[in-house]
Image (tube, rainbow over all chains, first blue to last red; front, side, top):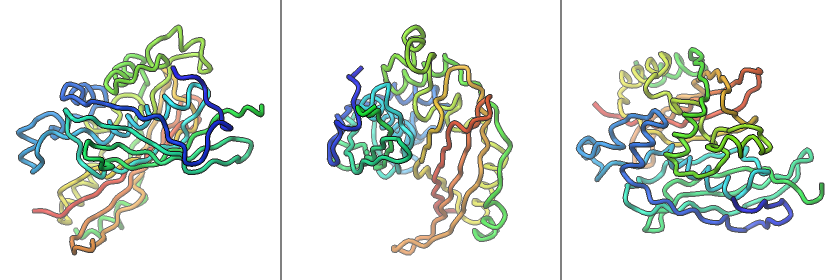
Length: 144
Length: 160
């Protein structure tokens, strides 16, 4: 695990250490079972192509989970993810590198808690943001 | 049924609650599928020494199934059938908004209730009609604490 980060260490505009994922078909099958999402679009190429897409697609909710990992890897065990949202904007295909990235947009103290807001996204090899979203976290403070 | 009637009928309705135990085996399988090696999800001894005192669920996991696909609540089936009748048979998952209030621990018993927040027909700039819907599911644990909320955004496209 990465060492613990604190509120005071984080500047607005700072980048979250990127997480690179290489999603395989096998992982899509694992995700289907582990999440209970058995829609054929995500593992049956013939079915997927019959709906007009080039191949099976990476599940949106899996991409949301990857963004969750991006955050929890970064904030450490003393950090708390309070909100995570994303839109499934673009299709992602297995066999491609999927880059999970983020940037701090705002930091503030409210009711004694130290909040950080970030934009987060997954990025395909063309550099397109396929799953843009936001995250809110609470970090420990050095002041306590 | 027209889309407006679907809205009148379904907006604000709450589905039957579903009870789910967040089993540690299901947490492991989920984290493994994400390829997230965080020991808080796998290693019971490590997790016992952590601030949580036990294995916890990764963000977005509320017990299996994570999305009520295999056991779609009746309310959701009725909504989807209504939209089909209104000329919107093609459902797309538009995105998710997750809110986390209390950590979810292995063994937690979560009661979840889906609520249809909104169903809105809109016309895009290109002139295509679509229906946007939001389903909010609230998860309450065995202590009566609201641990999380998940708002799923649905997009329904027209078709035959």
